[in-house]
Length: 122
Image (cartoon, rainbow, N blue to C red):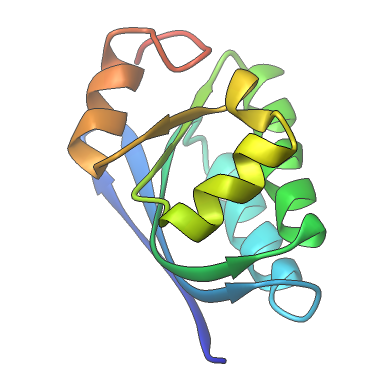
């Protein structure tokens, strides 16, 4: 399965668009993108998962690593658009208690802007 990751800014929030499978072969590319965006000074991130069809434990580790990196910089992270299959992974691992997961990118941006995404608002 193809994998792609791109990003753009909505105000001070970086929106990371991911598509394909997030697994052991593609996770390093996602990790590198997230680290680069954060190191550029973007500490409020929305990760759009609407194009993701599969997520394994390696991908979960990348997302949790990004959350820790952002929190250490007073940032925030929200995930958006997870399919039922991908959401089930978060639910089964109880990461729904740790991560902010919304239906849409707009909802994720609103959660970050209101400070409800587990971090400080921009």
